[in-house]
Image (cartoon, rainbow, N blue to C red):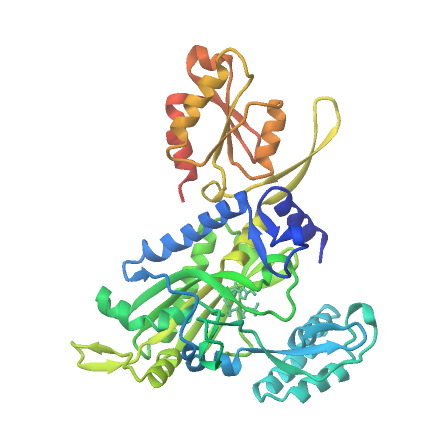
Length: 478
Ligand code: ATP
């Protein structure tokens, strides 16, 4: 994992964005906690998504389904049978790998060496085997390609096995088969099983959507790369119910809509691209990812899937309940098709963090080179919007500063500090990405103006207190 990525991980820990879960007990693999700044940033991202879905679309409503669901849900959805990843162990290093990932890594290597076709042919072959559930075929590819994997330098592999990614636990006190439940591996099913409840009570008619933000759990085989691949993570999903036959049109619309949203929250266009799936999931008739160019390369951030009527039909069959829409005007009865947009909040967080992390060097008045680290979050996303500082602790400056603070904190996330030099106080806000600092000095007492300092440019302007709040609110709104 590269140097920039390591710096971002350290920064996240050092400045209260992301901590390893249960760190005092040496942590729990692939589980993370968000700190005071991280949870604020995360809430802002979640809010931006939620409002874009539910406020900007009068035909999309939000729900919040439980994490536990009736176990038959996962039979109907195909997860018990098919939510597996192919797993292989290296007998020498005792390390476990995802068979598909190490083959893909080999394909990438071919591409880097200038033989893209050879890489693609390898991936095609693998996908063929996986589709046919031919795990021996996958194993043979690994052996033929002489994939050795990092340190061990040998290729002493076990066979390839399927590993189901769902976590299970017991509900109630009776310890038998029937009380086994799963932690949901995706939030989508909570929406499908509520499709009829929501449709009837909202009186929305296709095309309409249901949005949800919630935790999902996957027992990932290999969980490295920080919050890219977690065992407990948050999904923001929207399932859009449409008339069969209109899926191509809606798929294109949602691709465009989601791309625009990423641009609107400040993601640079050149760091986004679409990736068409080589291998479609069992339920999909089209699927594309929005990939982000992370410091560790292009990775999936969001999936846009045309799920057909697969899920609702399956739930009809298993529940024996009709999950149809009756179009009174056209006198038709149909099971809606579904276009889904599904983004991991944690991967979105990591993209915003990667965009924001800046290191610059400048020469100060004494001729020394000073390194500066700051997070250039777009103001609407920043955990803290404005810090207020009295220049000194004397002459009534703190009282004046607190008066300004009190007014601002009714509408904006604020921070107050009066110790340390003003330069230090600015630097402490830079590293957590606070876009504005306001300094109260002796002139403030004379003429009711303050210094407003901009994080990215370090530019400082003098502004009347009476104009301050409106200006900040303007800068911090989406
Ligand atoms: P991958 O191929 O990277 O495992 P996926 O195709 O299985 O992802 P989906 O099932 O389409 O992912 O889930 C939708 C979104 O949920 C993904 O785009 C990603 O942002 C997020 N996501 C999935 N798995 C994880 C995970 N283990 N940790 C964090 N986010 C995840």
